[in-house]
Length: 419
Ligand code: EPZ
Image 1 (cartoon, helix red, strand yellow):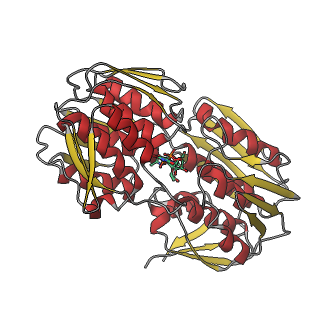
Image 2: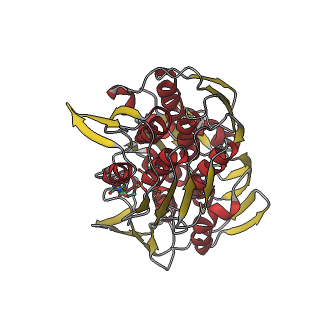
């Protein structure tokens, strides 16, 4: 099994082009099966989750190929509507194929998806909404069997109890080819939803209101292929910024999505780092010891502070001057990385959804295990700032979301290698 070996204490300096967004690319790849033609996707990150999505596409009869950071998906030859359990289990986003298959074929059989263990991750909101659009859903030997009796879903007014990203995506996908208008109230406002809608519009879909709480989709019978460039990954950007903040140094992120990263930047700035933004660029300089963040850091749906950046910022604040308090409001169990940070010398107390982080003078290297994608990235952040060497195992979690993380960090002068 591979591991990352990181020796801390070296400042990071240089320029880094931000990878394409995983959480945009995955639903867009699912959506591409609805186009009945060829889609060319640019800035597609090379990640294990992306390859898992391509395996699903190929299984159902599409032809998905890669050339560098571009993917081509030809959906003219779809001939299956079942996705086997082993492919569903590979990642959470496999559930988004449900809306796409229903919108294309009027039926699908899937199972409960896999993904990071962040506490219970139900799909009740997805299923309730799809039922309102005319989908019959039953469970058969652990499989979820979905069928639209008339072959085509109908529009509906749907109010989500919580602005779930995945549920919003599934509803949009089923709605773009449905009969009539679908209104989603309390829709997720994450930038990745806007990117999915941008892609679908390029394929001919009629969607308005994305980025707001009320999205309106006017269904149409057919979509067509298109060429599309995926947005930059705001969480990868937050991770490399946290690394530089923690280890010291200066970084220029190019190809960054600045407005979408603001909710993170406005908190990071309170640590005393200098941050400047320009068009698609973020500059950060970290010289002296970081300051704790005074305000409670509450994770919230966008435009609140992103849950996906909680762990990496916590790692940076573990050796800051003073006490920072986190409140995790999206997932029940998203503090699994704290044990590893404590092993590296951090002083963190978890009380339900709150984590109290008392900054220590310095972290030290240790042997730790990645617990999940962002938790694993947090360990890399801590390791780069720590005294001595850290070995991070179970890095398959990290590879699900970061494109060649060791190459990106080494190019900035960090001492990190894959072994
Ligand atoms: C997406 O997950 C992202 N994944 C997650 O990123 C991200 O943390 C999350 O949105 C929140 O921003 C992808 O885009 C692939 P949700 P998703 O549905 O869609 C509850 C990362 O690190 N809920 O908005 O699964 C749910 O349990 C990953 O890149 C229900 O109760 O998130 C959770 O507590 C991890 N019932 C909350 O809502 C439902 O039917 C938010 O989930 C659906 C969700």
